[in-house]
Image (cartoon, rainbow, N blue to C red; front, side, top):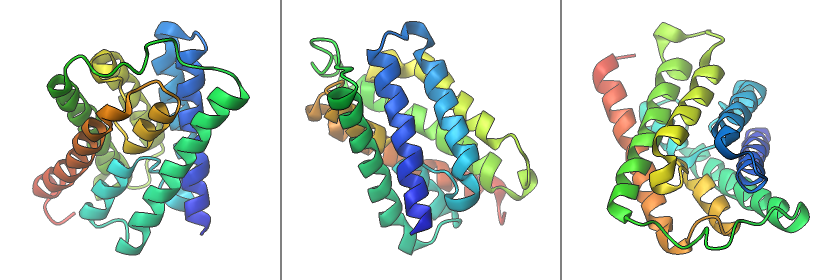
Length: 209
């Protein structure tokens, strides 16, 4: 239960920063705030739950063999719940509503699907190599690496898909009306496929790690 609480809290604050930074006028600095929020939440909760805060990452870590099957569904439920509650707090309590027309939908769902796959793949790839590999065991840089990956992907690909790279974030931004519910499949398919492919390639590259 403690692990699930940590996943809920970490995802809550991660998504709350997304909603507040994007809707609150952070502008071009929003990806830095978002990546920083993820970084500190990973450092805060990584020793308890692994600090996934992303169903795509949970899938990747499970397929890599570092997350038990019994934890997969509870992790994902905790992450999605944290994201949804964060979105409601940001919009309903703090009053940071999305700009009019923000949830109009992706201009090109094919490009959006590719962008979401690439962004989530990069995140899962970095997580697997910095937080689960034997060669980097015990390092203190994993949170920074993962947070900066999110920042980089947000700057590079966010304008194409909205830059969720995370099914829980996708739910959160949809609840906050920052994305269209009609596009939710793009996020889910792209992100979960990315997690699976990242795990497969990690195991191929790292052998018996």
